[in-house]
Image 1 (tube, rainbow, N blue to C red):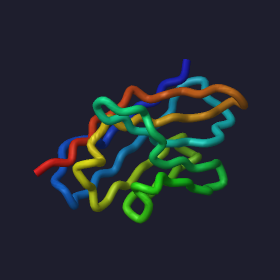
Image 2 (image 1 turned 135 degrees about the vertical axis):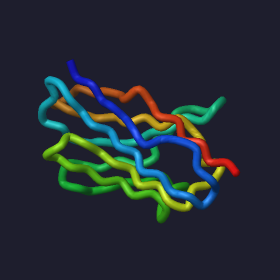
Image 3 (image 1 turned 120 degrees about the horizontal axis):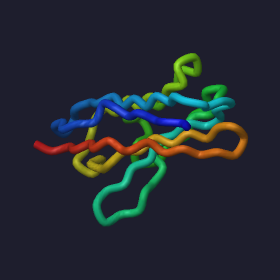
Length: 116
């Protein structure tokens, strides 16, 4: 059984920052890519950022220059540093991990609300 535990979401004012964490535990091995997705009410889930095992990162255009994805392979953890947050960043954020060659596991989601 593999579990992903997310943390770090919350309510923040526009222009503020949050840091999301997602830690994998259980019988997980050979983690490849790790990523963050988000889903706003009435919208489809979209990729926010992803990072390969060697550290190559990819970002959605809407977050480039504001968000930074990183990972700690020793801790099986992926992070998302979110700066200069905007109201349109409000969504449920989900982490996703590809592992074992062909498995994919999703986190339970964490709410991020950007509002004054």
